[in-house]
Image (cartoon, rainbow, N blue to C red):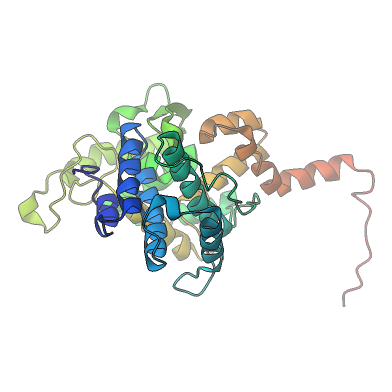
Length: 343
C-alpha cells in the first residue's frame, strides 16, 4: 500500500515495523487518514515517529493487538516516557513528553470513533503540566546589529545570508515560513510579505522594513540568478532547482531548515555576545523590541501569526526594560538613592 508519496521518512518509520501486528497496521491507516485531512507533512512525520516508538515499546512487551492496550498499559508507557533519556543523558523536556502522549490520545480517539475499539483507553491519560517558559535569549538592538554585521558581504552567499537575517529580524517569520517563501510573495511597492500556509495552514500578510527590502532586492538582482545557473553536472547535489523559491541554496536547490539553523547559529556564535540561538531568537527579538517600542500586543500577535493572544502575552514578561522605565517614571519610591555597602 502506498503511503505519503514524497514523505519518505514517515513511510520508513512505519515500514520498519512488523506489519503482521494489528497495532502497526492501524497506525498506518491513521497516518494515511491524517494525510487525507491535509495535515502538514511535518505533523505526519512527527506523529509517525512517535507512534513508531510506542508500537516498538509495545512489541517488546508482547502487546500487538489494539484491544490489549489498556489504561494500565498506557500509564506504564507514560512512566517510560518520563524516564526516557536523550543521548546526552538529559531527560526529555516537558513539551516533548506531552507531544508523545497527545499523539497517542489522538490516535486512540480516532480508533474509537471508527469502531476499531469499543472504548478509548487514552481518554483519561494525564499530560505533564507545561509552563510558559520565557525565551532563553533575546537580543537588544546593539546585539542584533553585531550579529548581522558578521556576514561577509564580499561573497554572493554572504549577500544572500544578509538578506535572510534582515528578513528574520524585520518580520519575525518562522524558519519554515522563510524557507517556503516565493519571489512573488514580496510586494516591494506595498512593503509587505505574504506568508502562505504558516502554522495551522493560515496565510497572513506582514509588513517588512525598508532595510530588509533593500537587501532582498540586491540579493534577487545580483545573486539569485547566478545560483540558478549551476547544473547537476556542476555538483554532486542533484536536488531539483527551486525556480520560484525566494531563498535558494548555492546550486539553486531549495534551502533546508537545518541549513537555516546552522547559518544563523554560526553568525550568533561569531558575534561573541554571550548568547546562543538561531532563527527563533530573531522572532523573539522582533516581538520584544516592538513591544518595548510601544506596539500594541494585538499587532504583535498578528505579526507572529499566533492564533491565540495567550501565546503572544509571553513577550509582556520578556520586555523588562520597558517595565523598568515605566516603574521609574511612575512609582514614588523608585528614584530614592540607596547607599551602597559594597567596598
